[in-house]
Image (cartoon, rainbow, N blue to C red):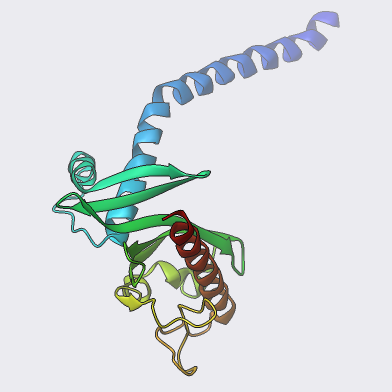
Length: 201
């Protein structure tokens, strides 16, 4: 009886230990690859918001183009990215984010060095509904922010959805809450970034 009772327990302990070791090994051998893929995705995002074209989706090409054009610095507790031309900084990129309908949205925004124009936006993570709020990741939505004039903003309202007076971008039909939430945190984060940078200059 004792033998038959203890055997399943011992067997399960051994099996659990084996699978734990396998998972630990797989995690160990894939850590660098996962980190590299995440870094590649971030590089693609930053090149996109800076409106720098990629000749290829090859990760090595992405890394080469990124290293050629983009640099970074720590400002406070944030990492700020910038691009230069003839040794002159021509644009900054910084993280943005907030809560939308179904969860947190995270992304990056790039602006010109004089904070007069929005160069681009991109979202790196969100849990919005595909076909509705999830359309914030579609190019038609993101591309309309390129070249947006930031000098005419009143009370930090850089982004205003049409058909409101002075509207400068289109929202997403059927996804009002996501659209409004994104507009709100974009305005707040852009205003905060510009204010901090101007204070530091």
